[in-house]
Image 1 (cartoon, rainbow, N blue to C red):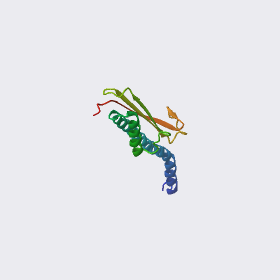
Image 2: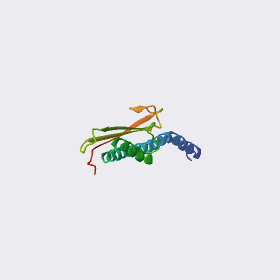
Image 3: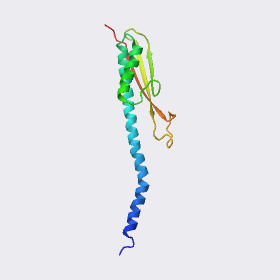
Image 4: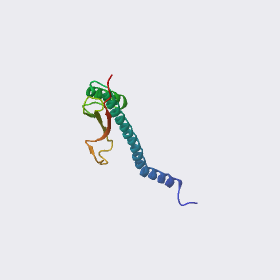
Length: 141
């Protein structure tokens, strides 16, 4: 006969599960958050590219760059508003062919665990994701 009974083994499993479960949940939540960050980075890079491309082909490059970035961004990620979590920096050196257009898109993504983990370069529970594109103005027909 064993000195360990069936009840003590069930208790051991319960204690082991209670010790491991928070670590497992934190790991799964971190993987999900990394997916959100990666999705935001891809969207920000694509939005900056689309804005720069629209500006190079336009007669009004500044306005078209803003419209293009906001249109792309609003279809990709939630919370895209120029007033809240989305910022654009547009630098147009001129309107002649060959002049440079630089567009930077900045998106503030919320951090789920800002009270638990301190993440460098985060402010007010948000992390800034940057995307930048540089193109030359094209000749207009």
